[in-house]
Image (tube, rainbow, N blue to C red; front, side, top):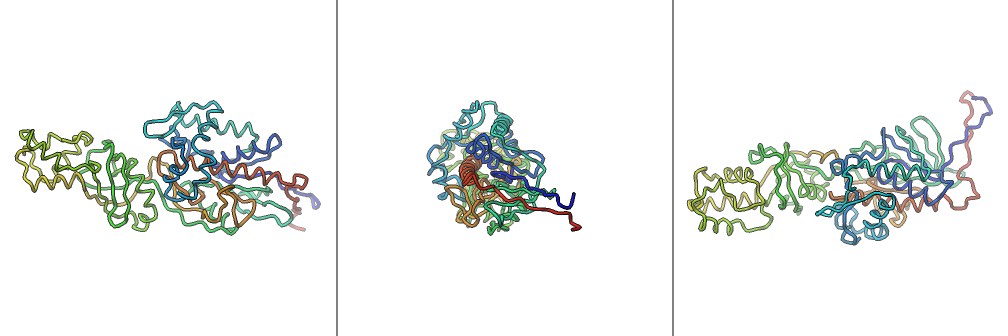
Length: 440
């Protein structure tokens, strides 16, 4: 470089750090709000954007949840419940559905309220988002880490330095780096703390339980459509379908209790007792006494009076209750009846660790909501800095709620960034800096 050569940093209306659902949606919104001359840049440290979208819902992408009332929707967020009522009122499920359908994506609502593309293929959503970003003029760079982020002293905006020592200037910056398992929490924490924010330590949410118990051996793949789970001495309980896996238990019931108990279970190092009511609150003794009187000649182990319990699970529970293989219902003693009822309504399992749910990474933790203006997602500590998605201390239970928060927070941040970036347009976004040869 010549001695007097001036290196002008690239100027941008907005820079989004993180190419996940919230970041891409925020970038699209910002660029569309600014219009034809928008200069919006997304920096993604990974090899490709929207990786969570790709794997979510078993590769189908659970776009959102059919819950049009914001206050009821907010109850599905263990962190952020009351704070999200306002943002979800201004951008809810109906807005998300309309956004995708206006871009030619057909969606369907399943019986449990989850909303998917009719193609059952997450690529449909990814192609839509990337297409919308390209149409809006958003530039996307992958494999690009941000080393530093600081306010400009000469004008409104920020100076960013990438891992390649490239210098970028922008009037607005959106942190949408996701959670710890995505490998981006170190970047998010470093950048947020450099601007005065303290992110609460992230711990996993939405995980399955590792259980080594004879009652579950050989039953992988079996499910119970509705059961209750409880963790004694914690106040944690949930209900929903349960799935027996190679390593223990999964399913919506387990995922719900893992989300609500994310910090408590981390403090217990994922070692705790789990109580399961396989019959979901029904009185097993009354049902079994009726069977003993009316069909007493049938063998207990071969005849389960609860249709929702798979036969092989019933056999394991009966065996664990010390019911002899040849015993008929008429021969069942009161003591045996009580033992079997206990297995049905309060089976106790020891949990010894956790497993990730289908590689769907969700964390509890992030930027404190009290430090964010939830009308705009702008930092209360640093003007021009915005947050969206899982980098905020918000997480939802399984069922499309985390993506709905991503779309919602990304949208509000995008609108606000566009306004910030285009304020006083006669003033340059940033003054160039002069980088002379290091030998001078």
